[in-house]
Length: 547
Image (cartoon, rainbow, N blue to C red):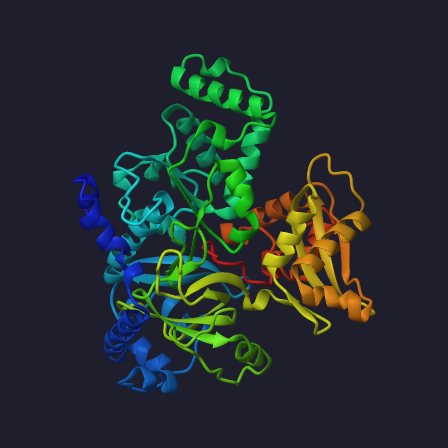
């Protein structure tokens, strides 16, 4: 049993908080000292390994300043010879295990990244911290306990979220279904069995993508419109819990929601859509989800705390650098340009930055461009007296759609506009197309009983985009443009696409079309209701399961 687990079992809550959550008490100066010390330790490991010497191009920096001056910024392409082949002898430290996120279709199926023993030890404490923040109402509280019931709704290992479950002391909690059984089941079967077990045994904790939380909650409500209680007559606990929930929903004159049946202690979510679905998750589940930002390459980079506002940077898992937005855009136009970076104590509130990380504790990634644009919401959390900059995920750098040079729309903003329009939809994808003028072309599959025209959808979403993005509104005000066009896709177009992808042998991460800038092959498949299309034609890299 890990130290954290022993502290929980022994009821030593103050010690557990100090061990896992005390990083939020650090001053910014303390954070920078930690960043510099751990980077210098990492540099010694990198100098002695083949990967480090290759990526650093023979440089042997002795200081943080020399490191940033001499070592180039990198992408996954720089690591392919070492990581795709799992060449452990070339790495700074021997991995404890390997995990992956989606790769680039037509090039490689996965981006493999190793996790070292020392990273894993730090990760365990951070997972306890996230769970603590999700459950507590004030500093110092530990509001979960041994044998709490945890719904398993994550992708299995070697995906990062599944690996996180193994990093956590899952033997402390009652996973529904049990971890070993769940990983041999399909996602849908796992969730159905988990809910069946939760109906009988109760549910305390939940960790999933924001979109998954909403999808499961919506499916739950639809499924329970006409409930046959006969199968539950032999299970008094499940029957009592269901009847109590039905009474609550009837009194509220609305469909049954998960919050009517369970009162969760904690809810944790990941994904770029967190802010889009924040209110909907609360409506369905009865509480806001704690938003955690990370991915396969950096694992956990920032997390919200118990006020559910900005995310606080984690100072002791990765060295953090920030490329100002203007520098990032210039580098996008000129692949030979090396953009300038700032450190954690140099960033400014309200500004956007492309994030760059260097792994600590023997990890392999060096000045690695995550491809994420984040926004600094504040330099500190005044309410909770946290002296560490606060952030929110803004966009994938390559998920920005530039229209007429006036606006760069992100997946997040477009998704929010579709949600705010109130349209009953199943799924969507959008891309920039050039006709006589550049247009934003939205391809959307309607939900059941969705009776609306393409023009009505275009008007509603256009109105919301203007409200959410002032530069987009300027397109109409200054240029007289309404660049949005809508195509309603055939029924089950996305399901047909996924079926074809699955039949062609695509991995889980490549089953769904990307939301932003899909290829011609993807669009043709969707417009034709799922017509056959080779796996390799899905050109855009799907986002990490944690992004």
